Amino acid sequence: MRNFDLEEYMKESKAAYGRRGDIEKMADTLHARGYSNIVVIGIGGTWAEWHPVVHIARHYTDVPIYLENAAELCIKQDKRYLTKDSLVVTSSESGNTKEVVEAVKMCKDMGIQVACLTKNADSQLGQLCDYVVPDCTGDCEHAYMMCFMFMLRLLWNRGEFPSYEKFADQMEKLPENLVRIREEFEPRAAEIARNYAKEPYSIFTGSGALWGETYLFTMCILEEMQWVRTKAVTSADFFHGTLELVEKDVPVFVFKGEDEYRPLDERVERFCEKLTDKLTVIDTKEFALEGIDDEFRVICSPMILTSIVTERLAAHYELNTGHSLKFRRYYRQFEY
Picture 1 (cartoon, rainbow, N blue to C red):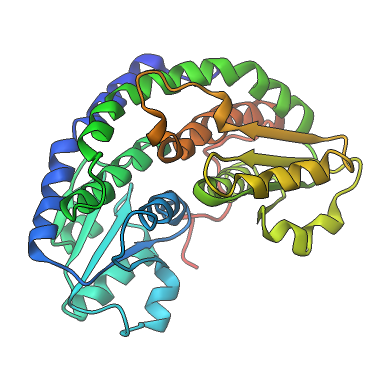
Picture 2 (cartoon, rainbow, N blue to C red):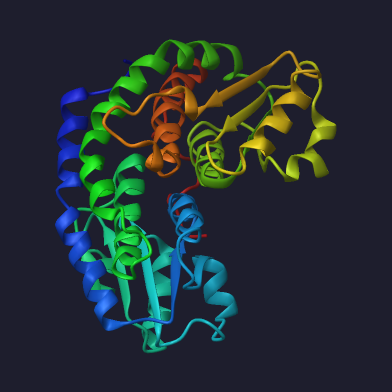
C-alpha cells in the first residue's frame, strides 16, 4: 500500500489500545464524582471525531450530551447548561489547539473541572485539565476508538451500555481488520483518485454516525491538505439546495452508513445515479469485521470509513494532485 508502514501502524495501534485501562479509570473516577450533563468540546477534526461518539451515545442514555464548537462556546458562554455540575471533556493530539485551549481556560475560570485525551500531557491543554489520559488520540481510527471507550465506559457505569466489556475486548481485534480493509480498498482508492483528484468541484454526502467523518475528510483532508474544492452536505440537507448543482460531469460521493439514517443515503444515491456519470458510493457495510459482533458495527463504521478515505484515498489524492499532505499555506503558519 502506498505510504503505509504496517509495522509502525501496528505498533501505534497496540499503544492506543494499551491506554484502555487509563481511559476506563478516568471514566470511572468521573462517574463517581457525578455530573448533571456531558459537554464535549472540539473544533475542526476533533469536533468531527467526537461527532459519532456523541451521536451514538445519545441512543443509549438519558443524560444530556452537548457537542460544542470550541470557538463558538467561548463567544456564547452559555451558562444554562455549562455549570460546575457539568462533565466537560475534550481532546487534542497536539495539546495546543488554540480554540480548545481558550475554551478550557474559560471553563476553568467558571470553576468547572475538565477531562481530556491528548498526545502530550505536558502541553498547554494537558497542564490545564484536571483529568488527563496522555499518549491518546493520534490516527483518526485510534482517536475514535479511545473516545468511544471513554464515553461508553461512562454509560456502562450508569447501567446504560452493559455490553461495554465485550465491546472493549473486541476492539483489540480492530487494527488487523482495518489493515485488511485498507488492502481491499487500495485498488479502488487508486482508481477514484486518478479519476477525480483534479476535478474542479466535488460533492460529498453522509449522515448519522458517518457525518463527522464526511465533514473531516472533505475539510481537514481535501480542503486543508490538498486544496481540493468540495461541498460536504448531510444526506438529508442535500435535497434542500445542493441537488441543483448535480450535473452529468459533477462528481458526487455518497458515504453509506449502517444506522437508521441509511435510507437517507440511499435516497441521494437513487437521485444521483440518474443525473451524474461520476457517482461514487462507499458503503461501510461491504467490509467485514472479523471477531467483532454485529451489534458494534455502527460504532465501528466511522473507523472503517476513516481508514479507507482519510487514510487510503488521501494518499492517492496526494499522488495525483502532486501536492504534499504536509504542506499548508496558512494553517498554523502565522497568527490569524
